[in-house]
Image (cartoon, rainbow, N blue to C red; front, top):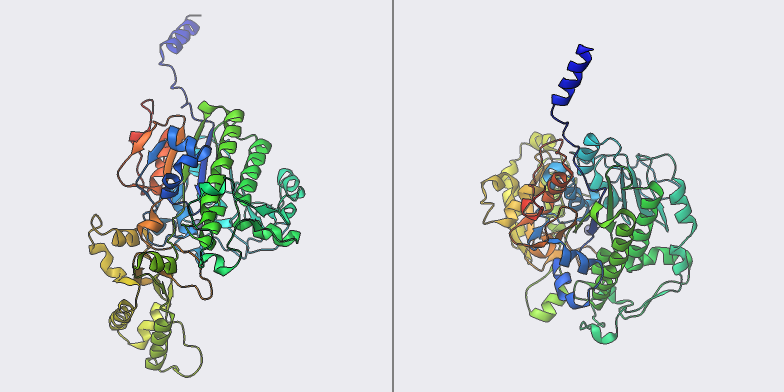
Length: 530
Ligand SMILES: [Zn+2]
């Protein structure tokens, strides 16, 4: 009896166990592919939906950056929920992003994909370690947009291919019933003969619709009509706002089917690709991108309302960001401002150096294709085989110095840096060097980096599109907005980076990174209870 009374006393005397952190039930991360923050200012008076809600009720970081050099889709998406620069995620270019022939797609033909190149952990891993019942759903039109935000986790990850949403064998052996049911509705195929007309009256658009550099000179005027063939239409809607509405609809179906946000805390990541497709085809100054942004605002308003209705306003936290911005057509920049802006190709120079190396190595230099001693992609010069190069006895330094000199003489090239010299740069006053440092893993084999002048872009043969990929502010500046539970509304100045998103959400969720990260917690934007 005494013992049991003592036991009772002792139990009573113990301090109460700390309550588990009350987390939001759903974290929603919306990445708008190629969304420049100035779009939200430029057409502010016409925004009344999701963009309006997030900007007016959220914590808006006005100086947000994907602060790395090769501002492409795969590196950009790899930073958002990992808290890591591409130098640490290992995802430094689209062409070596998520492609994986060993991870075939389910029920549709297309390039296999997986996160096998991704290094590090993500917010989802941190959450899952603290809360084993946590789940994630990540969706996009693009494989890399769906895969990279949640890293290597084998969760519900789907993307669009040939009119259907699918995944790869990395994640599953079959599509779940809700995805099959969504695909069976064949919504993209019903877009045959549909038209993309302006949402607002003509007078609401100040942009000239008839710009010669748009869309390779084809179909530049509203309304844009989808092909009559349903399969072609399912492909063509990728360059219209409709694919964003489809992606959001699919995300909501998944949210409901998986009952996300109803048990513990779950993550819903949505990457919306139409802004990127429209921006590439028509440019950041076009009537088309204007209409795309206004329409996406309405779609996002609809999407957020449904999320809030289902999960409750107090249970949701939302982040809006982008994987990169975009640079206008160099042709347009020249015509409108007179500024020097070019499409730059250094392929001839690199090929000539490879031929010289062949000759010097005694292995050729004839009429056939030169061996690939050095390759240039996205401004990064890769030394393909260090051992083979060393065996020739040729001095790498002298080759690279000569090559850099020839490259610097090309119109549109701003600077060429030796990677070995970058650590000596003043990263506060030299954002280009800083962005390259943030970009390059030491084992990437990159020996030189080429940066173009503002307004110039890398040339893609026979593809006269608007481009991104530079360490310029046009390409690197992105929106970063937090909204919802635990977020302190306001406009916040000072450089903020997409690598700060994951640790900030981690603090909101009461979870800690599982590995070293590059980002910091944006404490100013968190309500005091955090
Ligand atoms: Zn992108």
